Length: 144
Image 1 (cartoon, rainbow, N blue to C red):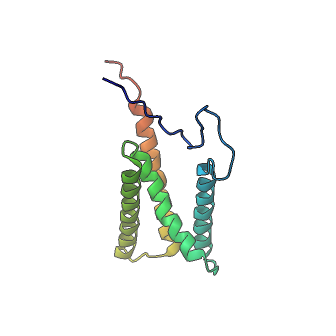
Image 2: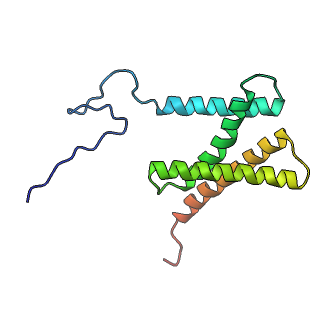
Image 3: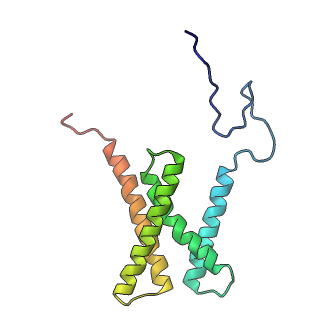
């Protein structure tokens, strides 16, 4: 029986057959895109909290309100394939945003600033909980 050798793609997809990284545009864009997304999200939060009249306040704030909980939820979904992880994280982000909005409306305390702060705090708590669970679950118990 013959074994088929399939070359797996490299992490950034830029290696040639000899293992050298080919120069050119579009190589290793992930850190750049992550930085741009962070800047847009931070600008959206800042514009929403300062009640600015800039025309891009709405889209930037919406990006912040979707991306922040999505990143926190995606940290917990490490076992899924990338597409399933993205869909699950986005669905969770929408659910979290709607729960915050519904809760604020139910207690008659709706405000843009309050919503942005509530989503930020809940996202940070989710992320901290998932990171803490990962750190403490890898430690061995003394009885084992």
